Every structure is written in C-alpha cells, then in structure tokens.
Image 1 (cartoon, rainbow, N blue to C red):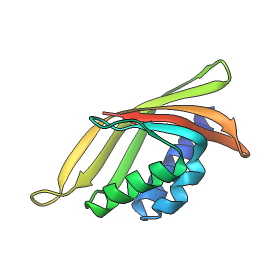
Image 2 (cartoon, helix red, strand yellow; image 1 turned 120 degrees about the horizontal axis):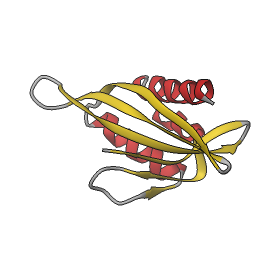
Image 3 (cartoon, one colour; image 1 turned 90 degrees about the horizontal axis):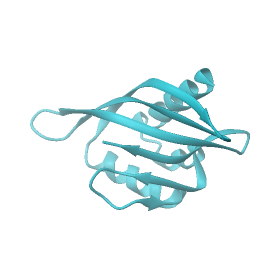
Image 4 (spheres, rainbow, N blue to C red; image 1 turned 60 degrees about the vertical axis):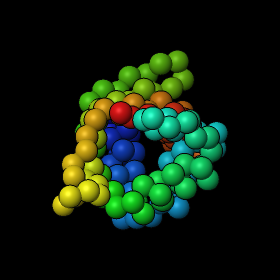
Length: 118
C-alpha cells in the first residue's frame, strides 16, 4: 500500500510540475472531488484540471509532497502528508500545509476520489 501510494503522489507532483495539467485527470476517479481551502468543492476531472491549470497560470510551481500516513479503510486507502509549493508574490513565496487523499480502485489501480489540503 505504501509503495503504491508513494508512486501515485510522486507521479502527481511530477505531472503538475511539468505543467501537464490536462494529464492530471488520469489520477482522479471520474466523480472525484477536490476541496481547496476557502473555495467550494469541485467535482469531476474537467473541473479539477481547470482548477490546476489556473493555479499554474497564477505562477505556482515546484510542488513537493511528503507521504506521511497510509491506511486501508473498507475498500479505500486514506493517505496524508505534507506539501510545499512556490508561488507568486515578492520573489516567489513558499507555501506549505497538510494534505489528505481518499483513494479508490479504478482503471487499473488506485485513483484519487477525494483530495483536500490546507
């Protein structure tokens, strides 16, 4: 479980950092939800890709993720850890926080069903 979850979050970060936001849909279940801080929940791959395209367009880069915890709950995996990101504002500010993903089985492996962070 740990290795699969680590591979998923590493590949997600590489895809975001490469600016391939259209490719990010492959990490999410068709009815996935993201819960961004201070914003409404977004549902579905198209809304999720649009959200991350906007984040990249604003100048956010260099996403790094640490996987802290993985555990099975019913037929899901719950994963959490820390994230860091550089963004716009006065010489590239640093941002960081906690993240949580609920993973479900789909299309040949684990997919993100719920993704939230602070």
